[in-house]
Amino acid sequence: MYKFEKKIQEAEKRGIHFSEGQMTYIRCARINGIDLLDHLYEKYTREYVSCPHGENTDEYLTTISTILLASEFFDENLCELVSQMIEQNKLYSAKG
Image (cartoon, rainbow, N blue to C red):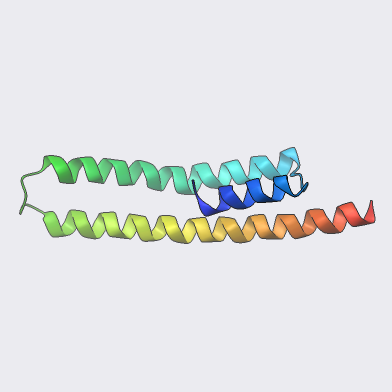
């Protein structure tokens, strides 16, 4: 489970609800970022495992490491997005 997913669960446990529009935005961001990176990670990991070792090993490991770093960065950005949505929801629920 990604950090941003845990953040959503924690907020919902505290009674903070996300609108359907917010959840759609989060799902789209996930599909266009993390899911794509997960797919690339699986692809390059399979290729790395199936290739004869020593052949392009450094290239595969560099690519896999880069994908993992990008995935972590994207998760942090989604955490920030969720935090902003939580604050926004607190403000609007306090006014309403």
